[in-house]
Image (cartoon, rainbow, N blue to C red):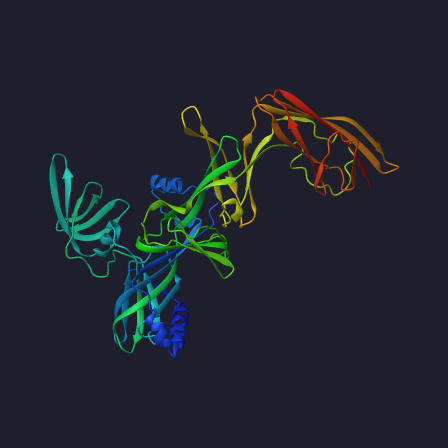
Length: 518
């Protein structure tokens, strides 16, 4: 049997020592009265990229490939398991079964809640689970029987098993050594050898003065767990208010089920040490997000150290090889939203390290505006809770039949309360803008250049449209706007914005001149 002997007894001993210290003073009576009840609780962390990670697709790919690669799962879980165990008196072995198959044994913490003096001296993680190949290995050198189909009949063979690999069984029989294809052969084995495991097991060598049945709390980390957030927003007909629902999609490939468990999520950037590439069991840094509202229909949130802890106020079943959706918070309706059409002709051009003097450098183009929807995540807007990073989908009702139609989606970064959420839903179909440079001058001796632009926005919709035009002053940082036909707002050191009301089936034109000096 394979086993890993771990140098984690120091961690286990530290947990026991802490329990001893807590139990040694007047607080011991209070602590004893607050002992947890038997059961499990589960905290799930995630570094899932909502733009590319889909739990359902990941599970389906695993099943189709026949692989069990949990190291590709962007997350991990922390399992807390409280159960009654029969401890040996003195020094002896204690088997702890039903742990996750992808447990990290070096993270195990052991606390005897009935006797804080109990110590773990050594730990083995035994994961050599029973399988057809493992069984055949255990019967090497022992007698087995085979029933092999030959034509329309069946041939029975009995002999000593010499080898069972590469699809072949090698038997030493009374008639000599025979090689039999494993495919189609029915194998009959004798008594089952001892030491075979049906579940991953931790085996501890413990030292207990009292022995007997004790309440023990075990905590460990396991790979193969993650979650992500998804939001659905329904806008009203005028794009002025919305209703939102949100879900956590939880995935469990850890190799264990957690029935009737307490479930928690953590929000914040929790650092994990990254092993060197190429080593088995590589884990990435965990960007952990979550959200909730204090309501039985969702998670209850509280500050926890420098993070946020979210607890589902009811127990739930988290089953192995499954994905499930749980409401993050109760539906919220009636919050205000803002819709904008935004032109950004020079978006993506960064600030220059020196003046750009090339007269052919410029942005003249024809394009449609981006559709942006935003809302303030504030309490006075019926919201005001931390929003985890995730995918947000937007719908509108078709008045003709009352059905919801999809109008776009975007990703949001984790957003604290009192901040603004912005989403880009696509490009407007019936609004078009053209940007044309009409003049350019440069005087190298005077270190001065000018550039003049005309921007025309045409609206073919049946209603007037509010349009924002962003202009990036990308040639140099020292600039001045002159001769503008429309007032502008300075957004930052290199960006200005024009607000336009474009009538139905009409147009609006912006003209301005910018002077650069250096």
